[in-house]
Image 1: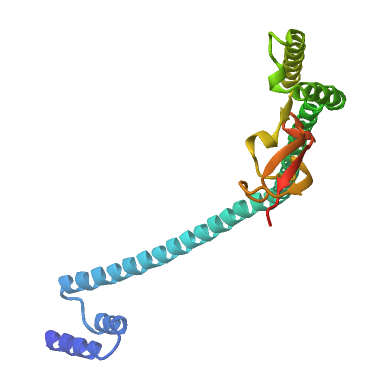
Image 2: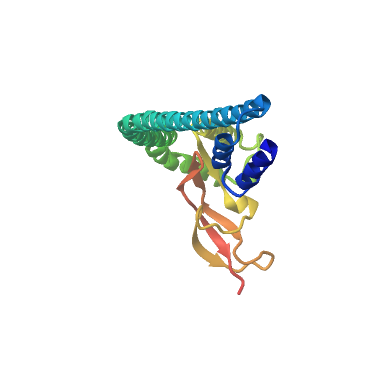
Length: 249
């Protein structure tokens, strides 16, 4: 009879919540069976332990989340603080960089100007040294021309040592004097050139055409006669040669 009543109570508990069914089963069924009561007590205790463990886990998760939020806020605060502190330093660093670039550019420009000044000074000193004798050399050109004319007016047939010994000696002395003078002038950069001897083409930079004449055996524009020899001082023409130029047409 007792078992039949207990089974009915369990069937009714399946249609209701477990906790309510357990309460009614416990209240309606007499605890004659000690094993059934122990089983119900252990289930109730396990449910309570499960609920307590769930609550503890929720509290633990909440605590961890709060700690993570607090740590994140602290990290953001520590990361933002140096940025705010670095802003003035960054501005000052940029200003110093621009100042260094400006000073470097000025130094480079000054060095370039100084090198240009050095090169210009060297050229001026070289030019002054090379053409310092230009005025003196021009004054000597007339003497050189007179010696050349004196030597050229003596015909070769008159230079006979047996017939005209004095004339030959005078001619030799003048020739020697001219050679020594030209060697001395050449040491200082003064040189003489004769376009008529080599038959050069007329060069307006070095020659001055005084007349033109036909020459059947020569091309037009060729120098065939030198009226006055030219002179150069260290490559610069100080007096052009006066020449006659061929013109056949």
